[in-house]
Length: 344
Image 1: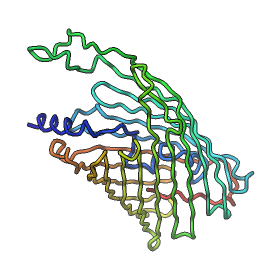
Image 2 (image 1 turned 45 degrees about the vertical axis):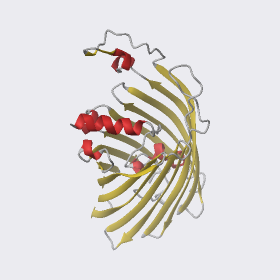
Image 3 (image 1 turned 135 degrees about the vertical axis):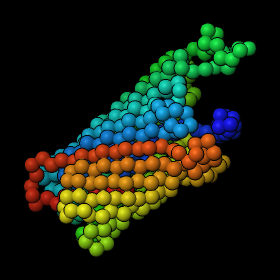
């Protein structure tokens, strides 16, 4: 019965579905895929970030939709520029979609400039990315209508579908970010990014009519200190792609509790995601997350509880996500203030 329900839902939504870039529920833990303007904007000097997402395992199998991401970035010349600095980084991700193993391997260099407006408490940042995108498709894992014979699927029947198995092109992104700290109890961050500036064309059939639409991102977060050991971090994310017909919004709040002064924090949070595809607005998922900071290591675990129409098949199971961020310090002037980096 589940298979018939899934087939019906997919048949209904195929007309309205639009291509979408990768996205992480823990988007704040993947700074260089969120906004190039965040490059080098770390609590100290440099940062490593690793992210993993596995989605729809309950519907199509454990390895059909997976995303791996890694990045390194560093802030340079902060002493020389008197709290302002230059951020340099590298970001890579590999996204695997569907049984046909459609993969998107992207590698980008990232550059940002962070202007300090008030002794390291307020930063305005501009950044850009440029890099190479390579997409691959394994035709041997696909089943076409022409291969369905009287007894069912027959792999010996030629599909008649022929095309390139890979496609490569250059891509460019840009962004803006504002981050401010007001004393020890309040910090704010908001920003916007523009992905696929050149709107490149992509096709496995040597066609130049399939254009990758630009993606627009806007986000913001606040950080409130409550007492000596508790913080509240409400946040929101908005993404739009494919000329307004593919829209996603996340909103929620995290609560952090200090476990040991200056050493560790524990976080728990809940977020709500809605999606718009063509003419349909719908609830998509409730995201439950936990996190832990210890010294210079940030760890996060989240799970998407699917509440869309697909929950009939998925039994409310969506996607699991892991994040690991490490930031470190090179020799710096001890008089330079650490940059407040609020979690999302």
